[in-house]
Image (cartoon, rainbow over all chains, first blue to last red; front, side, top):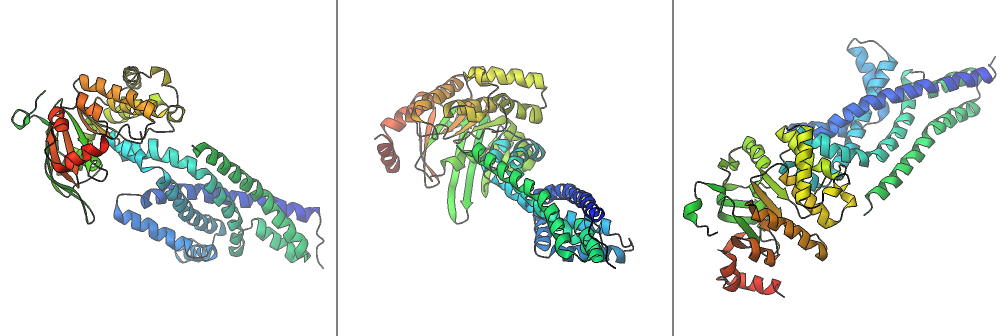
Length: 218
Length: 253
């Protein structure tokens, strides 16, 4: 006997959106903190720091997100933390986001004209003041559009957490499909929900890009 | 003011001795010896790629050198990074491209370094900033952003910003080269004012009228060497070196 696909099933899937959003938010917040550290390390005058950040980025950009999830998930277990999909997904996505945001933001920092650093040095400003008052505020403006663009990728990326058993939107769809055997209906709904989350963000990113183009036009 | 090597040694604002600089294979500065007295105004000229910008950028270590010593205000720069930070506070610089901070108002541009580097209070920094904006004749632009100003106004803000640090030496790296012709004089006039107040100045420029009026000595550089040094009178009317004559011939047309 299969369950029918009714309002309760729809509701179950819709409610799973909150876990997708929560996981995205945690990964984005963690990734933002990690990303700024990685970006600063990438442009640091200290050579080992630059190489460490570069290696970090290369590893996470050069391996599938799913493998990163597996490694963290099973790795935590081996180190005796136990099997916890929530923690594993949050850690893996945070590391993943740190690498990508770090690389995006490095580009933004380097896009600030070198004259800005020269003027800061000439005025005697130290590293902290130069970064926090001159370079990062200008890099932040450049970074908004690509950062929102990455956020869309990240939200979609959270669907892979379903494979390690974290019940978010995709996993909720799988659960309902297993009970109802109506894959086309179920996954159409799931896809539509992702679209509703991501599309406005994409539009926003494009809008910001346009605004940035106007702001920097001379 | 006539400056000779005897009366400035020991009390020099800037002293460069045997300075060598390479960019890879390119020999940008060749055994540069130069002593600048306190209060002296030096104009550096020469064809592009002659090393004149590199020369003054060494004085606040925007460029590092491979050999030789640079002493600024009695402190040897080439001796370590602590000295470099110390010296940068006392050496102001004005760039060809202004390099104002575009996300800050004119006033904020002028206040940042005194607050962060000198540790003065916000009120005091603002008072100083407004004084210098008055001096460069744009007090009414204080609340605007750099992009809202003309090139000449931006460069005057850049001069005010440097002066707010109360520097002992001012470096000018082609300060009028990026300006529309009608704005060159407002910047030069500001620099002439500054010169008349006794500031030590090193100016890289092609404005020979400014050199005649203000310079104590004019330096001609070519291919990384100081080819000729002279007081403006003799430098312009009776240049000794063939390369100087060729250069002056080219820019006077």
